[in-house]
Image (cartoon, rainbow, N blue to C red; front, top):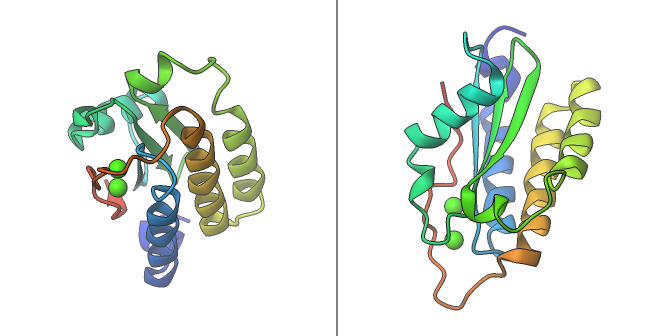
Length: 145
Ligand code: CA
Ligand code: CA
């Protein structure tokens, strides 16, 4: 497992994009997925860097969520913006993380990402319900490093 192309097929990517779109139908929050082979930085620091690089800190309600995956290190981080962290407990993403981890461990990457996206959307919905004038502030495409 060394290439991102081997990590997810084009079809699988499309399924994940659809999951992001579905998740965002229930919340004003914006979810993005970034996948790369590896990083010299600590995964959390790198997730923070990617978050800013993708301009995810520009949402109106500061409610962007990045799911960052480093394929080679088999690690991932769920990084939420300030607007989310201000209103949720620190262990807010734990159940989403656990769910994703269980799939990743069994090499079900696509399934792990899809369920992670949908669960994150469900958790976001409680604090950031979908609004009538909601727009798609951040692209649903998968970002690759
Ligand atoms: Ca939105
Ligand atoms: Ca979006």
